[in-house]
Length: 115
Image: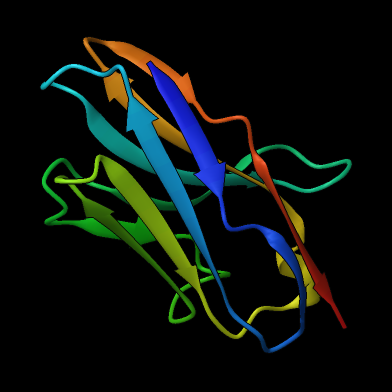
């Protein structure tokens, strides 16, 4: 299973970015778990998670109302729409999926928000 993330970059505070996480080599039982981030000197934290089928989502309090997680099963891709970005959103963002009881992580994509 491979996860390829894209969409990170440098943006000014108040701006938007859309992250993508494309999965390949997975089985039909795979499901996307969510997005996590890790800022320098900090532990990795959950940003947003989504249930199998996308019927339920959950967000960290710090991003509620600003970020939206979604999936496209036809494209085997998960997205994170990030609006009203703040300097404290600066981190490496990772996507995660689960397949046949194993967890897989993407390589990470850097998001830098300048104030």
